[in-house]
Length: 245
Image (tube, rainbow, N blue to C red; front, side):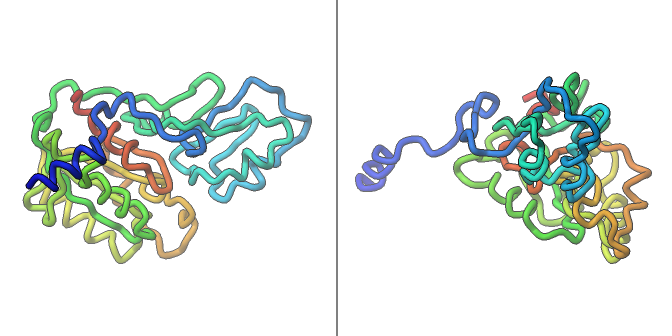
């Protein structure tokens, strides 16, 4: 017992106490920024190198729903107009606000007016054919650093016990029926979350012939979280902001 306390005092607190004010290291590629610098005439380098067509010009914008946070557009820009901050404020309740411009600098996240899940939210993660990167980051939320359960939020293994659904992956044809079945099990009121570029837009697999996202087009989502994969802190801050915790 004494050795255990000795070890705890040596390492100190391992968890994040204040999630809202937590900052990541400067080298982390988070929320992109578009600086007020004129583009050279007929320059489309950032558009040409973007693997997911997230970048557009006239005016320059970055769609976080498609962005995989690679540095290609930043490296290709001759005027250094594009850069990435270390901010993880990547969650939005309004998906249209996820298009970053010089005027719209960050996604809009609004708290739910009346949420029955403020102190007890059970989420079921449905992986719909992705690379498993997002699922690994979600699993990190249960470790001692992020400690998701201290906020009354937890993951469950079956949708019957869930209050909400968090979808990851681009949604393949083989998983389309599974999504429909899961939504029938998780009844209203419920929380629906799209997590990661694949879930938001298809990501790198958007043009694949085996993708079937038709079921997603008929639904309204409470929370959209950008990233490839999203950092655990981005997911946690998004959920806490939506629930007003």
